[in-house]
Every structure is written in structure tokens, then in C-alpha cells.
Length: 406
Image 1 (cartoon, helix red, strand yellow):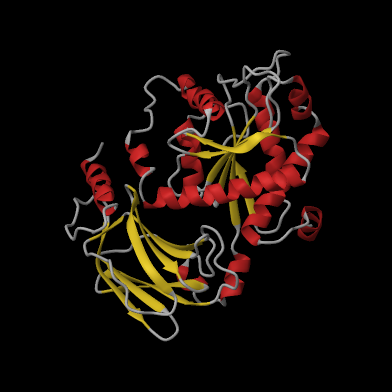
Image 2 (image 1 turned 120 degrees about the vertical axis):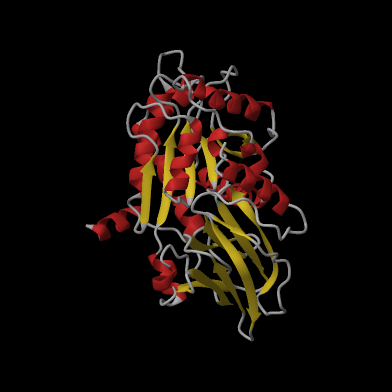
């Protein structure tokens, strides 16, 4: 591990303590330092100015339950403490820390509906980023990457009205067909391979989601290819995904067990079934090429830090909504269909992630459904509608959306 990465990870752990040290950690190549953080209150809200030694990639987004606005700096670390905020009408508290070795996050908890807007300018050889939090947002903020000025290009987004910027923001959904290549996954008594079922269902779900306007749904694999678990999660991070859906159809020794299940990440499995399913899925990397590096132990430290908690919370809320929507669409579910365990493929610290077992290939009735085109279309529509409703707060019509695009 590089010295800069190690120091950043140590700094991340320090930032999880109640007080933030003002010491500057060792800097990796290309890393920027935040030398000043200046919050200023007004009658309308709060503005926070960040001064950096150079230009860093920055984005702002919103989180729900509770409502918060966050700002991310890539390849940047702070050299100053930031614990107190001036009295203001919109923000109650601030928390911050390194969420990965290369990403520093500041989260502002809201006490009233608000939107965040970013601006950025060069100054004296460095960079000045300003986050302005103003009243707005109606019934609260949208999900990750979804503020009124969620800004990969903050200078353009800041010029738009909040509702216009939110309406134009595209959702990126990464769908992961489990297993692939030499890793067949589960195999039914009749010989049906999970890797094939997963790919077919993932393709269908992708196509349904892409029928909605403003949605980019992509697959981690679109053929019979093996991809290590950590790489699957990293694909979602590289694409700056709003949501990562891992699609499976496992096998279990209880042949009578059937129905869909939605899993989220947890250090401790919610039950023995979840623990067994996670063990099955985590074993996929036994097919990885010789010399493939397993995920480093720091991943489990990240589970404890600021962003991991925020992301898991978002994932939990989506999983609960998805279970409700699947039931509403009369999709058979197992007893206690929302469960959790230590799935490595769900470990991304900043992309909300869930794993969906559409059914069990060890059960003959489930196997028939998993291979039935009409049923597959039904569950894919249910999942897609749940995603859109969760992020956009309303029921969309995929057919009309598809027609509107033509």
C-alpha cells in the first residue's frame, strides 16, 4: 500500500473521533489541501467557502431521512478543523471525514427544507469552492447525487433554478448480474445455471429502466464474463451511480424455501439464512485469476465511518420500499424478505447498494418462474417502478416514457 493511501486511511479513522485534528496528513501525489473553511450565516441560510491549494473534483448532493446536504472533494484532505457553525435558519449541525482514501465529505444536517448550490473559481493559484444552502426543496431533499444543484459542473448548475436543475439530473443505475464465466453460481437440479438467469433478468431490468426518461441503466457485465466482487462495486463508483442493484437467484438446502428477498450490507448477518447466502455469494472470488488481490481489511474500517453509515441508511430505506413495492405487485416473497449480511459486492462506501434474490433455483416452482418471460417482465417492472418512485416521488409510466423518446 502506498504511503499516501495509508496516511489517508489513518486520517479517516482520526476524523471519526469527536474532535478533528488540525494536523495535515502526508499527501499522496496530486492530492489537494483544504487550507481554509469559512462558514457565513445570513437571514436566508448558510454559505461555506472552502479554499484549496489546487483544483479538485467536487460535487454536492442531498440525503434523506434525515434531510442533509453534502459536499464531496476528491483527492483532497483538510488542514483545518471544522466543528462549529454560526447560528442560521437552515443548518443545525455539521459532520465530516474521509469516506475513502481519496474522498473527503462534509455533511450539513438540515432543520428546514433547503437546496445546495455550488460555485467554483480559481484564486491565487488555488481554488475556491463555495456551497450556498438556501430555502427550498419542498418535502425535503432528494436522494444521493440529487440536490437542486448536484453539480458535476457546478458553474452551470448554479445558474439554473433549483427545480430546473433537479428535473434535468439523470439517474444512473448500475445493475450487476451475479456470477459469470467459470463461476456458474447456483445450479438447479435440472441444470439451470444461475449466471445465465441473472444475466437475462439484469438485461431485462436494464431495458425497462432505460424506458424511463432521464435514466441511464448499465450492466457490470453484458456477456458470460467473470468479474471479481470488488471490481463490480468499483464499476458503480466509477460511473458515479445513484444505486447499485446486484441480481441473483441462489440455491439453498431448504428446497421448500421460495420467493424473492432483498438484502443490504451489514457487518453482522440478520439471520442464518442471510449468513449462508452471503457466504455463497462472497465465495465467487475463488474463480478470480491467480494473483488477484482480495479487498483490503480497511474496507471493514470504512463500514464504521461517516459515509458508510450514510450509505447504508439510504440502502436500508430503499430496500424497505422495494419490499413493499414487490408485495404490492404480487411478487412472492420469503418470510422476512428484507435481510442483511456481509455481502462484499455491496461494500461500496458511497453508492447505495442492495442485492436482490429474485428466487431460489433449488425450488422447482421458483425455477419455473425465473425462466418464465411473463413473470420476469413482471418483477422487472416492479423493481424499475420502485426505483423511479423512490428517487422521484411519483409513479412513472414506462410505456409512455418510451413512446415520448421515439
